[in-house]
Image (tube, rainbow, N blue to C red; front, side):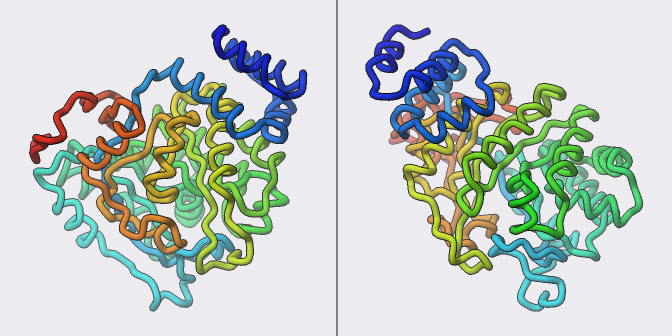
Amino acid sequence: MSSALDVVIQGSKVSPALKSVAGKVLTGERISPEEGLLMYREGSVAFLGMLANHIREARHGNRTYFNRNFHIEPTNVCVFSCKFCSYSRLYAQREEGWELSIDQMVDKVKEYDGKPVTEVHIVGGVHPKMDIHFFAELLRRIRAERPDLHLKGFTAVELDYMFRKAKMTRAEGMKYLHEAGLDSLPGGGAEIFAPEIRDQISADKVDGAGWLDIHATAHALGMHSNATMLYGHIEDYNHRIDHMEQLRQLQDRTGGFNTFIPLKFRNHDNEMSHVPETSVIEDLKAYAMARIYMDNFPHIKAYWPMLGRQQAQLTLSFGVNDIDGTIDDSTKIYSMAGSEEQTPSMTTQELVTLIRQAGRAPIERDTLYKEIRDYSSVDLNNWTEAD
């Protein structure tokens, strides 16, 4: 245990039970769901942040990762009606949405010819006419156009619908898309696994067990994936801990998750607009608890388009070691929900500056966290496009 931190903990005005749990955290011992709940309920944001930052720096030092990526959102037309969603338009109201063709999406990829992006992120609504064969052809076309890009795509919600419509098992459907070029899965669609919450906010889509099984199926094929948790709506700390515990157990079995991403509920223009959004303090506690509890997840990510740039900077002292990528204004999911970033795009220089202002070392990575370049000593005053 760090002697300096031990002194701080012992001198803190917290209960003996909380001090005991903190001691386990500092020695790298796994805490139980009950202990996690105790920390969530009793730990101040400063206390939890101190512990989370200790874990972050023990694992990653000052390294903070980002990548050069862009998003393709094939459609916001969706057969599902999640109450928290500001993005999708029901299929019956599709005149309010967009539907991209394969050619249009490949043209978007071509816009990045000659640019040093490493990943395309493909997610969108669940459109009944965009089936598994449509997306397999899209993957093949992108692979032919840009063979060096990592193709990360499709939430478990999209995949579940594709597989069922094609009358494929999850194993068959995942293998089919993987062979077409799909490299990894994003973490979206997890929301909150607890049925009593999920049934209220997204009752008609794949359940928590199905989400976990789809990711386990991808892991069995050697694919990696991410995991998310939508927090700050009608759930409570019990539901958050239960959600993280189920992910932690799957990671114990497969080791296939790269990163965990807490996602803040935004209440603009959706059926849950009456639910107030969480405070910055509560957000920072959520990130700190993610780092403390998710002991077998190598990385914790703050998705800066959802939080905003300044708050994303703050999370780097609360357990976070990744703030996603350049994005290039290619996603509307959070801007339509009223996020701080209405035009979510940062240049590499801006991302590097943001990370360095927080006292961290900016490291460009690929999707699987292979380090591409350390930008901690790059001269920002003499930045060139080649950088």
